[in-house]
Length: 376
Image (cartoon, rainbow, N blue to C red; front, side):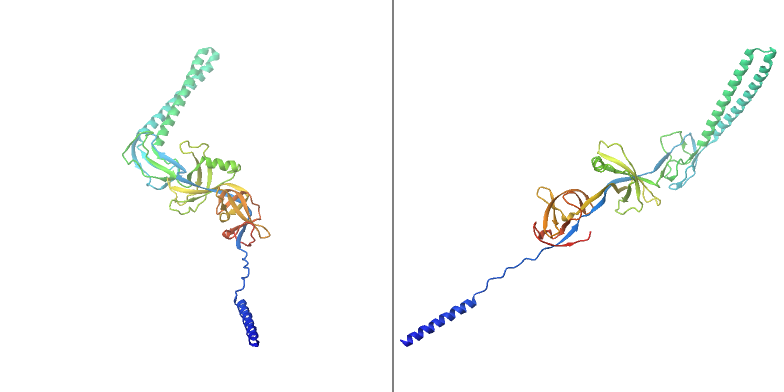
């Protein structure tokens, strides 16, 4: 009996020990993990003055161009310029044989002398008859006839002078002169050629290339939209910069001169003309270029970095705004034009607000974040 009691006591102790060991071997419940606050970069919205720049295609054209043609007929004696050189206004370019025109001038001068002598004689006769009128030796009719002869002789002198002037002009025209300063091209005729007054074929062409024009084209609808949005546009001088056909930038800055008052019905484009200095002759007529010009300015524009904009499935735009207490808010915005790497926000934002530009994939509306401002 006593042995049985000892056995049962030892068994109970063994069971209790096993239970304790089992309890110690079971794993403990895991502790709750706290997620770290997301780190984001933000940009502070600021009001700025924005210049809207248009990039327009264009082509260079002469500032002035003169096509040289003869104004009298004759045989070409000399060419007095070197092709491709710079000429000044008034320089003699060609010499036409002047012999026949000089002879005509001499004849005209002789006619002037004869007419002047006739006039002087008529005036003397009229004066004598006028003195005899009181003696009744001559009649009033004789005096009137003498006066008419004087008037006729005076008209003959004026006609002879006009003929002499015409003959002198023709002699001057035998020297074909440059009407403008510029670079002259190749000559289309040589010595000995027969030239005809006002002929269709040109002798040479002079181009003034400094300064030089650049004709630009812009969509009529785009220009209309700019003028509606910014009525004050182009009320000041507009600077224009050029990019050449090889991609290099032209060193000189030009100025917009005017825009056409009509739209080309076949293309829907408007022509704008700018003028550029060309002291080195780098720009030649007919070159294709690309121009950049600021056609309008907007004051107090709110610029939003393009990286901050989230597009919605319906085509709208949202940005994530960080409030002063660090909470994220999704804000719908209305976007206008693009300026460099920014959108211009027309509504939905105010100056001073912080928008998230980096870390957007880690945040949702209502979350707390640690915001670090970024430089512009």
